[in-house]
Length: 102
Image (cartoon, rainbow, N blue to C red):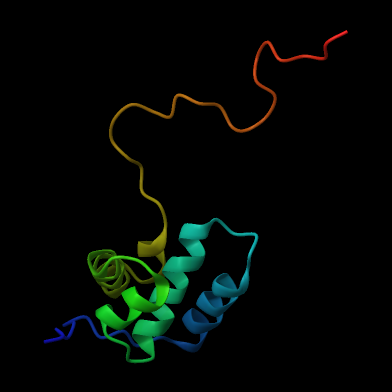
């Protein structure tokens, strides 16, 4: 039996415009596009199970982002600092020791 989320999403025109723009941009990081699509679908009345199936992600992930958006709006969709050791790998580029061979 599908569960209904207690976090009903209602978007202002500005919020919808911003999320639709993010959902269309293929140059944004994937997580931003997916989060925008999740919230747009939630605002259109889809249940978490339906959103998860349509986007091939877990229902718990949809639930998390729906709740964060409900309380924090657009700011809730942004990345927060993570605890623990920082990333050990530098951004993509030439790796040390791999120059041109003669």
